[in-house]
Length: 202
Image 1 (spheres, helix red, strand yellow):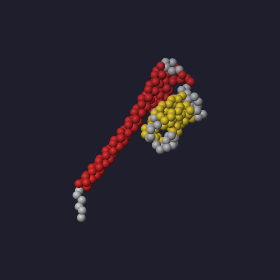
Image 2: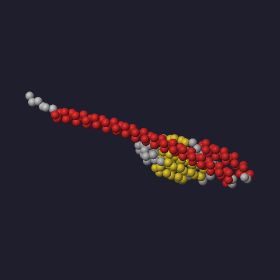
Image 3: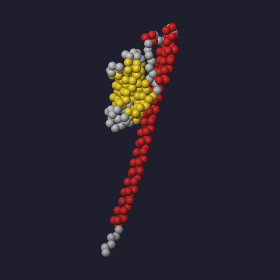
Image 4: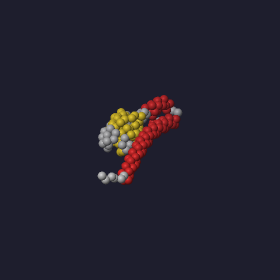
């Protein structure tokens, strides 16, 4: 390992630990016909990853886009249920990302999203030892596992809500069928009884 690599190894490890610790989930509700936007101030060569998952509402879809400081679109997803976008900043400034529910006029959406910690890559950091590259690869792998776990949790909650809703509908449909059946039986008994009654003529 070179002297340069040794000098940057502690910095790299601290940056990767920061990346893992900052990769926290956020849950927001986006009402119909509205959008929610967030931003990160990045330097050139900074790296950022945004992942999202629609948990509730409508057809479980959302519009997403990410723009650079000059409002150039770096990524855009239309009516997606889940997505991941990774960028490396090409210029300093505010990078904005938005979740839009403007396509819906009725349904509100619940969106869970992560913004992974930002690592500033200096010019001297281009020279890295194999161990440092492995540490970076491990950090990316751990972040992917964390994202997958959060995705599974959201999907499990969505499927559970769907199953419970279906169970309630089946229950009330069965109750309605029973009531209709009793009403038809009562009407048939009354009709047959009146059919066999002997009418007296005074």
